[in-house]
Image (cartoon, rainbow, N blue to C red; front, top):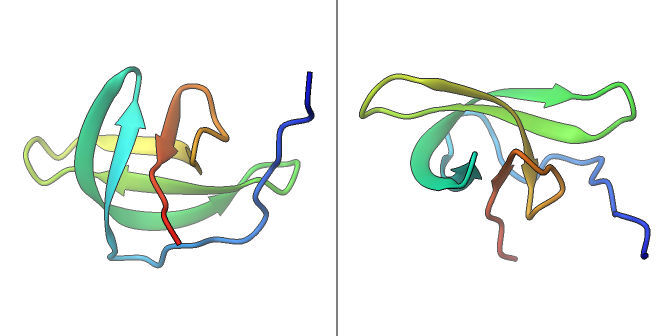
Length: 73
């Protein structure tokens, strides 16, 4: 099994509108916080305008199992 790549730099800024997958469902929301895990993994906290829910610890492009932000260069 190939080693999973851990992104260490943030690709989005606070206030950016993004599409992300969390617990099997796709959402559209806004980045409200840039965070880092203990291993240096760059993560995001996002919120949706429809219901105001907060989605913490989002990775990027499947770098996290539970939630991740879709990023295309």
